[in-house]
Amino acid sequence: AYALNGGVDYLDRLRLGRLGMPRALAVVVVMALFLSAATALVLIVIPVLQKEIPLLQAQIPAFLLKLDAIVGPRLGEMGINVKLDGAGLRELLSQQMAGVSDSTWSSLLASARVGGSALLGWLATLILIPVVLFYLLLDWHRLLQRVAGAVPRRWAAGAVSMAQEVNVLLAQYLRGQMLVMLVLAVYYSSALAIAGFEVALPVGILTGLLVFIPYLGFGLGLALALIAAVLQFADWSGVIAVAFIYGAGQVIEGFFLTPRLVGERIGLNPLAVIFALLAFGQLFGFVGVLLALPASAILMVAFRHLRHHYLRSSFYNA
Image 1 (cartoon, helix red, strand yellow):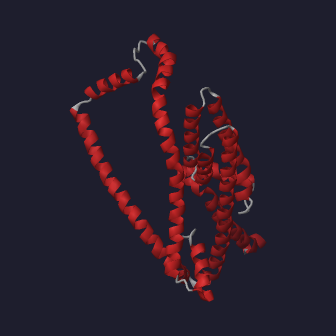
Image 2 (cartoon, one colour; image 1 turned 45 degrees about the vertical axis):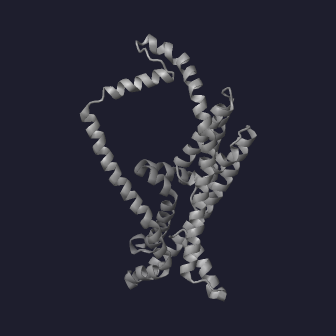
Image 3 (cartoon, helix red, strand yellow; image 1 turned 180 degrees about the vertical axis):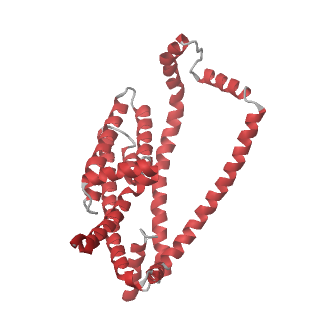
């Protein structure tokens, strides 16, 4: 709601300029555009998967034969006589399935029931999210007024001032993050195209646009590129090219783009950006990496005001 409210406010200002768009309609338009963009991302991935999965299935038998020729003799030396071809893997899987006891199947069935309940919960949440988002965007300014009205009057001016500073920093963060996504989408698409990949454009665009999700976006793009390299190139040149392109992309993003395009916009030193990503990732994992920079921006505003009050305090000036 916070990220989409700017677009709703823009359309709402058009209504005040007598172009005739009520806020409820503006909310619907912005939500539709947002969902369309998310759907477009999915539609970028599906054609790549539709093209690569049948090719991958056709290549699996030859890949298993190569793997058996390389790994089979070494497993034999260790006393493990397993054929890593299609028939051998089917036989091994049948033996394992036959050895599974009834109690294990009961445990798996109980886990499936729990998983089914969790799936229903996720579906209910996915249905509720657009509804909650609609009403948050519709009543956004009234909600902020109520929050501001609940702050004690002697602190109201300072709290509103801090909130406005945080709002400016987070807006700059979002703009900087979008620039990083755009630059990386162009880089990965161009680099994969130069390396001769047929799926360079969709894979490059997907990797760049999903880079705001730490690990997931990069990992998905890397996996798709590696699959394309195995399917398209007969030797290891494609895999080596993918390793070089994505390794360089991580260095460019982590040490140049994010510190400069995001960190400098929110007033953080490049070293502070790197430290924030490492520290929040260590403390809070995936969510910490995702929220490291906006949280650091908020903390920076708080520390700035704290320092200002400290320098004006009688304790400091005594």
